[in-house]
Image 1 (cartoon, helix red, strand yellow):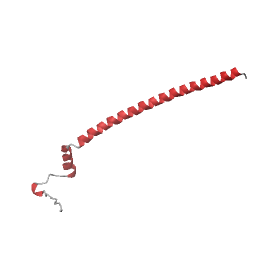
Image 2 (image 1 turned 180 degrees about the vertical axis):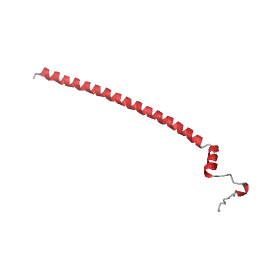
Image 3 (image 1 turned 60 degrees about the horizontal axis):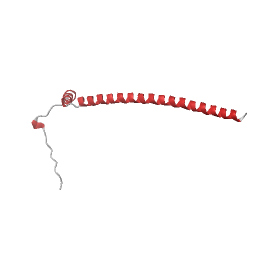
Length: 93
């Protein structure tokens, strides 16, 4: 082989390698963008679920609801005045 053929073959290999690297880079970029979009959608769904859970928590913490549940499920009642016992704590000195 002469010198020119070796140079041309080397350049051909370099151009082919560079072209393949560009194709792979674009493919990898496209895959990463798709993954980012998927993760952003998942994050949006989690944020919506979090908001719904906060709303549910606030609804369940409603004092009127708690009292209804206590009366109905636990048969709890407000004690009469004479049934209430107050405890005092004295500090030892």
